[in-house]
Image 1: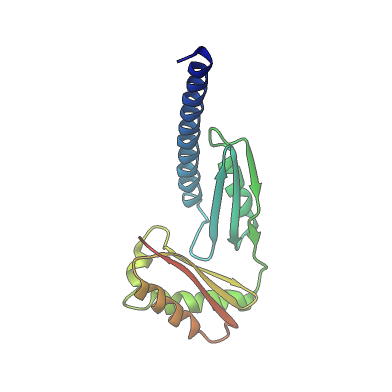
Image 2: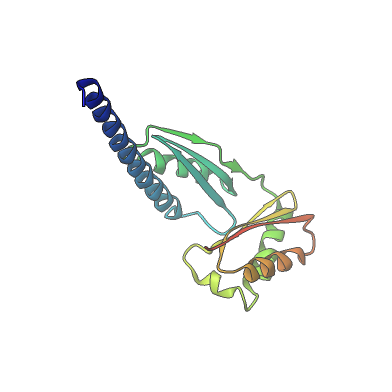
Length: 172
């Protein structure tokens, strides 16, 4: 093997090692971001926080009912080692007494159902209820397709909701 070929192999191996290290760093950052977001004191069932990690940049998305939760999320993510930039695209939902009533009604309908009330016992219940101008979106993760369908049916039965989007994911 010539010296040029050896150099090419060394460069290739170095780039593979760098890619693996970069991937591990991204996984670590993603794990820490998730942990920090679910630990926020005012993060609840009526909020939806999501994120995407690309290298040292974290993009925050979702919807929250309190403006302070948007800034709190950005502040805790900025402090994570390896994060150089935070793109905060979290939407603050407009205050609305009607939306608050719908939120409570959907919560009672979904978590009051005997098939779904076990989800309410978790520290951060996995079915998040987002209401914006009377439109309901269910997001989160449930154990089965049946649970997803029951949640959607119960939310659809709430008086005053204009529409219901069921974006719940089923665990793999």
